Length: 74
Figure (cartoon, rainbow, N blue to C red):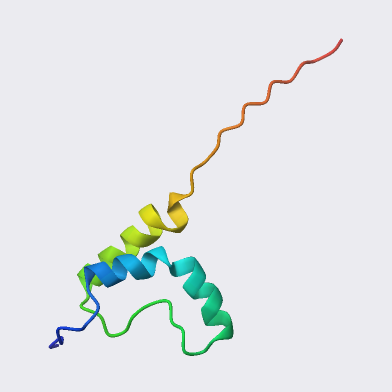
């Protein structure tokens, strides 16, 4: 399959992964908004999308560890 120079690649996949939560919410109400670009250039777009979601977007939320100490009264 031949791809044109403007076919989304790694960088657009990265961007689409990063804005996934907003795009998903908008796609529920706006039929012209999509969360994934089709056609794309394949593996590099998918890799960028994955990195955007996991490391920059939804998966990048910092976790907070809470330690609770319980005192038992007797």
